[in-house]
Image 1: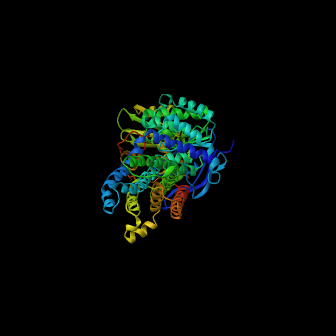
Image 2 (image 1 turned 180 degrees about the vertical axis):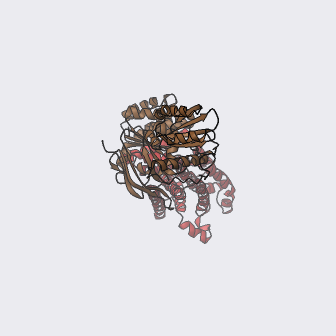
Image 3 (image 1 turned 90 degrees about the horizontal axis):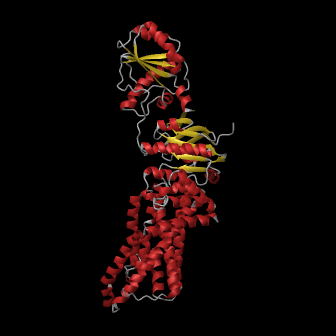
Length: 255
Length: 379
């Protein structure tokens, strides 16, 4: 029970800091929103060329922007962990009676909730722009669960890289280097059937791609078929593995 | 006497890069004392404190705190200790009060108890006026006080302070000493602190361990350690300038005198007990007809203790190096005439020069007040 309580207290600490400084949460939305607006406009003509409506590309793009929001929102998680290590906050917690895994768990849970809020804002903007999405209540809830899982998973990955690199600058470089390729090797911007084969191959081993696919199925209100559940399973497995890895690295670290 | 509250034997820490931070140190800290761990940067102070607080594992050897083994019983150790690191680990984006409450939660204390103790500690450290302000607005000294307060919420039996006054201005430093003394006297708390400030160890600690290059070189009360140096220095200057050789010889033969060293026109007379020897020396000087102009008696400082046990000054350079040269010569003479100090490390300071003891005039006439350079660098 102490483990759950410790996680909760630390989670509440991060939540309190987020509420106290909402600018950081909003700041993380700037880039996804720019992509939503500019890409939505820029590529809408392609949809028209292909005989579709211009608003349908926006609907196609929205799940990709949702996942992008998760990635951008999570890539900072490790930087914050390193700061807490540098400030001695982590060490200070380590000598208390705290259940140590709670130190990592509370952080990534907080990130999961944070990206859910960010995605909520992104979706509202997309709807306001005229994106035709009709997920239904169950779809929205499941989407938020998928988003939460991805936020937790990528925050764990960021924490794990942070614990490996131990320095802020290379971590930020790694975050930047990883985020965009991970986005491009997905069906976020064009569907998989239009991709060059080598990109399609990379997409099929990219967990982010499955996040986009699952989100698209949900936002379009499509049937939850086998492919959909496969995508959800890939996301869940990826997040579980990342969480386990980051906690293992944290528990193993010795000064 | 009860068993020591902190005990270490053969404690060794070798880092993966091969650097030996601790070479088999032994320690015994008694319950209720302020124990100062004194050494220059890189001596192994932080390595020791990290092992004792379960943050790091020893490569070999064993240590226990309040009877719990620091490796096997980590959680039990953590419940009885408080730890204040060099970096104030308090959260900048929370208020002082929130930091304290969170800390209490992490020790799974009862909510009411947390509230009570938070208020008490805020009062004890005079933090009530800033309790509800964000820590990011605190000054360095205030942050340090809050950091210490958070380490006390669960009433630890042992408080570990790693360089508690590092980077603080003089006023905050002295204020912090008062708080630390208060914790010791009011709560009877054992306090283990590391420092590279001589004055801090001298004024604050009941007992001091001198640490250098990963080894404990000496342990004792500051007074006992200083007594162990061999004696006090009486500095004499004369009406007629430099005294004649007869004065010099006569003093040297005097039974109370350990050694006589000329420094310019004055003499350093090393005696076992300065305050007692002085009245007996004065008549002797009178009969010689040496007109004494001024007399100063100085106790050796911890600096001299460090010098004696490590054979080197804390910093090799400008004033420290020169002081070291002077002291080393004196130390050699003293050891030779007393035929003891067998356990002290070789006193061959690289800065010693072979000029003999008579005509040389070290530019710093401040002995024994030479001090370690306060490099504000972390260990």
